[in-house]
Amino acid sequence: MKTDFTELEKIIQDILAVPEYRDHPASKALKQLWEINQDQWHRMDRLTRLSDSYQDMMIQRERSLSERFDKHLRQLEKMTRISDRYQRSLRQLNIELEKTSLIDPLTELPNRRMIMKRLSQAFESQQEKHQQGDQVANLVVAMIDIDYFKKVNDEFGHQVGDDVLIALGQLMEKTVEGLGIIGRWGGEEFLVILPSHTSAHALALMERLRSNVSSYSFDAENKTIQTSVSVGIASYQAEDSMDTLLSRADNALYLAKSDGRNSVILG
Ligand SMILES: Nc1nc2c(ncn2[C@@H]2O[C@H](COP(=O)(O)OP(=O)(O)OP(=O)(O)O)[C@@H](O)[C@H]2O)c(=O)[nH]1
Image 1 (cartoon, protein in one colour):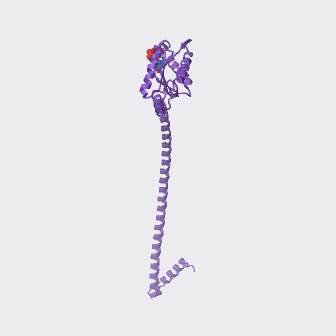
Image 2 (image 1 turned 45 degrees about the horizontal axis):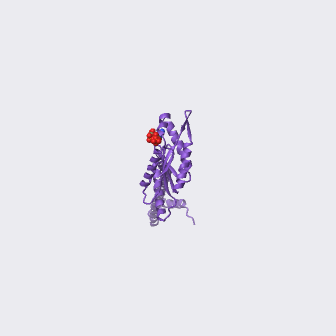
Image 3 (image 1 turned 135 degrees about the vertical axis):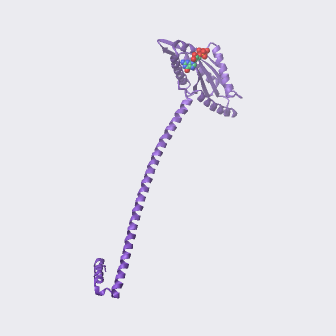
């Protein structure tokens, strides 16, 4: 049965208000009971309000924590994106840096640093091959120097000289393509590495390269520039170091120059 407290309260108040009942023990007990009830009701009310405000506080705290968490997450995502972008551009920069540190900017051929790297690799595999007794095809290097290049600069200017270097670089690269690697050794000098060639094959290839350059003519200011190269070749021999191999190619080049230029000599 549901108690109607408003009705009950009214009945109790009515009883307590009757003057004749005032000193009656039942009236006193009822008054006491009523006060206890009121007291408990106030306590319950306080507890309920306390619990409500505690719940509100917890909800508020949870919301603020969640907002802070979301904010940190967004910051973290942003930082990750920035870091990814930064790493990508750093990688790209490294690739470009590696490229520029190994490529000659004028001719876009491998520079001396790269050609030395490749020579060192080719030299190591040559030594392994040599130890296994394979001595038919060897590592061959060819030192190439453009003849009378100073005259080109003097007569047509440095810019035309640069253009001639680029054109000859491309022509020579085409000639050795698939057979070896050519790089700019410095100034008007180039170095060819042929990893596995007989001396006869290397000689024939360099003869073709010399012939291609000498039949090439460069047009500048309505004049034709005739070009030629001198080439010194050295083929790997037992006990060779990279230095002795290069030095023999250099000596052969010197002989080719002394021989009147536009020639190929196997040292
Ligand atoms: N335009 C241009 N000239 C260069 C470059 N590097 C070196 N040279 C020039 O190449 C010329 C080399 O001259 P020399 O060493 O006297 O040799 P050469 O005139 O070719 O004569 P031989 O080698 O004896 O046939 C010099 O004039 C250098 O200035 C370059 O990057 N661009």
